[in-house]
Image 1 (tube, rainbow, N blue to C red):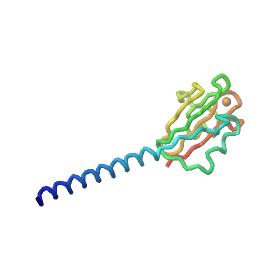
Image 2: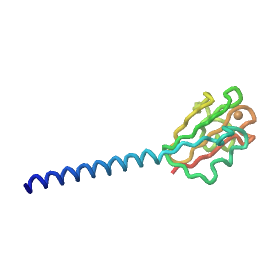
Image 3: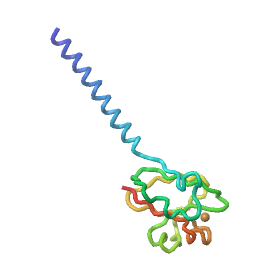
Image 4: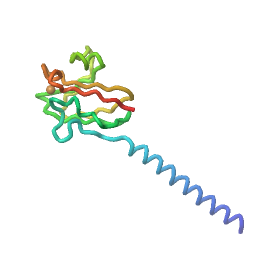
Length: 128
Ligand code: CU1
């Protein structure tokens, strides 16, 4: 009889443990957030201040919504960001609905259409 109760308690503990495991896993998933760059207005001019006040994490996704005939998104390094020149071989996104996952550290994006980056169509996003 005591054996039976012990086994039932073992099962209960296992179920509880599994429940905790699922809870922890779902928290991990919930921590990855999705941000729409520029919010309702989308990826546009004067975007440089958009990341301010937000805290991004590696694995979060940025969504860039824009008219692909008018804009693009280029992932650049700091020099490319500062100078508004995309280094050769930079990854160019041009679907108009690009989803880009942040890597740990600084992530820089510009629009490489002439004059757009100079018009502050650029963001620097620090992901923890
Ligand atoms: Cu643009």
